[in-house]
Every structure is written in C-alpha cells, then in structure tokens.
View 1 (cartoon, one colour):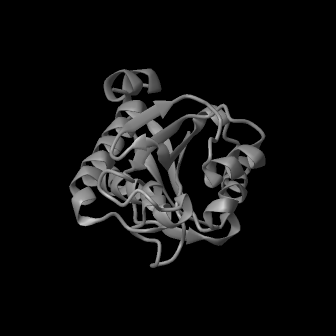
View 2: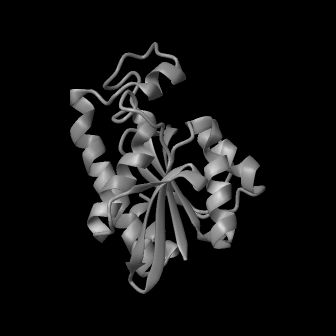
View 3: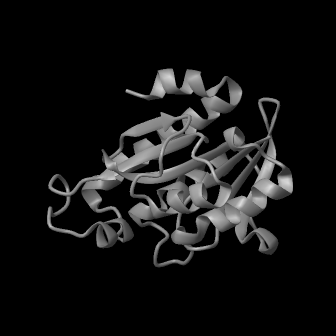
Length: 192
C-alpha cells in the first residue's frame, strides 16, 4: 500500500495559495487515477480517497489539520493502515526550489517546512519519500521584500499560473511513474 499525502491548509482562503500546492496536486492525482472524490474521515482528520492503480493499493489524503499539525493526521492514518514510512509519499511546496521545479527524494530533513517538521516529529523518522514542488519566485515574478509566511499564504499571480500548472501536471506524472515503476525511475526522469 502507498499512502500519498498532499500538504495544505483547509478553508477557501488558502485553497489556491502557494502553501496548498500539495492539496492541489492531490486533487489532480485523484482525477487522473479516476478515484472516487475525496470524502471527510473524521477519525483521521483528513479528506481521503483510495483505489488500486498499476496493481498497488493507493490511499490519497489531504490533512484537515492546519499545516503545523499535519503530522497528527498522517500518524493516525499510518497506524490504522500499518504503513511503513517508505510507503508514505508526501507532496509539498518548497521555498528552497525555484518556481515550478520538481525534486523527488527518498528521504531527508524537513528543512523550514512546518508541515514536514510536524510529520517527522509525529512519525519519528524522516526516511520517507517526498515530492517537493518549487514555489520560490521572490525577486523574479513577485516582489523581493516579502516574509516567507505572507508569501506562502498568498495565491500564485497571473505570471506564475502557467508555470505552476505545468509543475503540478509534471508532479502527477512523476507520482504515477513511481507507482507503476518505482521511485528511482521517477527520480531519473523528473529530477533535472
């Protein structure tokens, strides 16, 4: 079983924000895999959908906790399904990567990302795959002088939308490649 977690914040105010790229990719993935629409699962504090793809049971979740508490939801799902950390794949926004760049890693530290820090703390390891989508554009398509917090909680501007749409589609393709083949294949194709 593969548990795919898209990180984001609940609520319409955050729906299209840079910080919700994980949720946005999860939505695209659910549609591409033709899984049932996401449904709330109160005991996990998530929106969840599941199905079988390329012979693998795949569960996709969007934690309904706010970003700083994402680990709480992930921990509950992992325990319920008895999932090992290497089968947890997390999709999230990354300020350390330029806008639109995708970076897949099998493990690593949480960096400055509060959602990832929460997951690492909650499950007790950083040895799980992640799909990092670059959102940094300050000084390029957005003004340079913005705090990280205000920047990530704002929506993508008009100049960024085409770039981020392509990045989201590429991330979905990379995840499907990893499901149907393996993470190494996806990394070789999509980590440029």
